[in-house]
Length: 640
Image (cartoon, rainbow, N blue to C red; front, side, top):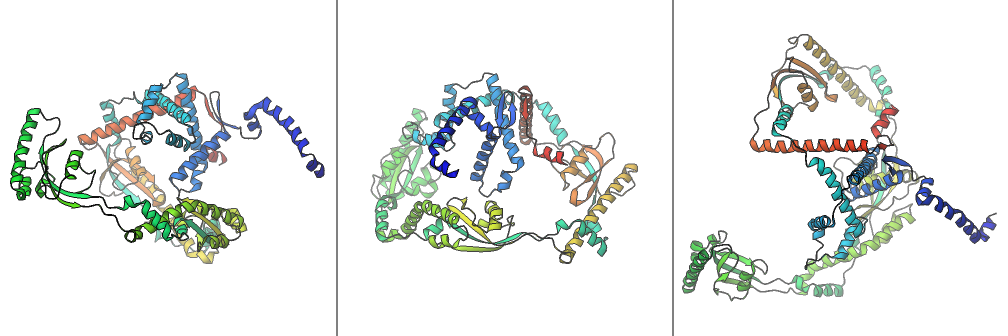
């Protein structure tokens, strides 16, 4: 049978061709994908569909974008059910808004698109000195986003159209001051309260569980008492520093590099000058400019007659507030540091010389040249100390891509050991013991990276002790690791953790007791407000919680102001229970004008966001949005 297949390959390929082509003709590429399982519909917006394949592709792009911007982000967070569902919701929103744009017949004109592109700072940076756009760099910008220039412009045009739809709602959102004041005053309203706290710590010393209690708690909660899963690993890091160590810089290359960078290395000529400035900006009336020039001319005559008095004259007469106290001294400066008329004059003068009047946009200058530092070209020996590491870094950067490929191939091809690739590339095999699946607080280096830890604790790595793939953990940094020994988590015996079990049991019972007593005291106070002595009163609000948990403040603010004193109790989790007596309702404190305006602006944004959200929800109903995948929370609830 197999002999027949091998001898008649061409005939079989022709028969397959005859079968496949009609299938494409009948159902098309999309239909073929659908039959292959990639076309499952996960959401619909009107007649438009979002497929599983489209969702997967969009989420992959989102994950790649986030990993590029935050390299150490835990991959599990990126690929969680919640993160994937967020991507789906974004796709749905894009489809809904696109339908709204189409239904409203909103378009973006070429002129509006051109104006937007001209104002884009990224595109502005691509302009040549003559103002024209560098098309090659523009293509590269678009390509970095997976687009052609035409596709990039189409996306900008689409975004502008979407903004028109959204701004029709958010741009017309209006919140009168009277309404915002009413809402903000209610939100920041104060309450005079008395607080009783029931903390587990106050009950712990009274709880003394027996050995039988401890044993029963251990048996019921044995999953809480397990050893930590750990691994001993070897790992190799390839980075720019490692490549630098393998790069040799010979004398000929260094001399050639020195000659290529001679102009950059030479110290530029600098000059030190003092000046006297008489202000005369360009917009000064002509008569006033004439008076300023007349005054400057008189000062010029004065300093030329007595050059040694220049500093004293500058102190008394110069209108440059920065240099006048120093006798007009401007210290050393190079070309490009001063306005052109001043620079041209200063760099054409001789030491000790006093210039004629120099007119600039600031006014009239009288310049005295004090010192000249000529341009200096360092010798090869003087420059080599800084040039050698510079050249070595450049050569290492060029070599890195080549070495990175060898590293990636090496750890894969000889996956049972890191030593061959380390020896070949002159890298160090490092070791670490008791590595855990999650990075420890304060950990640094490759073994603090969630991406590497996930690879180390993968099934393939743990069971087969293979090298992980070469992982890019940062710019010019690749790492591969290998598990040498693995200790899985195991249930611990009671005698190993008896102290911990007792501590947990005491904490659990103390918490129960605190909450029980708290609820009992609340009931007693509700029946008789004077039944329990209360501590001194404090005033709380949302912006001044006085150390109370947010849930406690919210509960106090919800007490009916018509029935005071009022009582409320709040379970604060592991911290126990809090009972609050509300005595008075107080208006918020007076707000400074500047803060009031800031709050009103913030409130207006809340109103706009609320209206935008309501508008989007109405669009979802209008376009009959259906998300066919349950939200992660809903799925868990259904399972329970």
